[in-house]
Length: 137
Image (cartoon, rainbow, N blue to C red; front, side, top):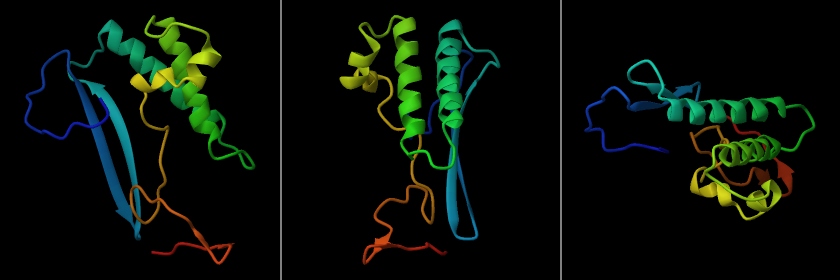
């Protein structure tokens, strides 16, 4: 589940609670998403997917180093998630072809993260007359 916006369902054992929270501090915005099993325990299927997403997050974090390309964390998550979907029997075929064909997008239709700044989903060009500019609140 990417986002749940109905806000009307009663939670039951076996359900997952997705928490998408944000904050603002000194004019800058941020957000974070977490998933919890309502009963306190994942089902086997939920645990398999949770562990896969956690492994993808850890792979993304491992790529975050000075001088690395900003897209490397996302590329790492795509590799890990696609490998995991193959292992779980949800995708079939060679890893490189599945990634090239974006077969994972049925399950992972977004990116590993998004821009953060003065708005939760800050986007756009930050160059003025060919020079990078600082964003101040």
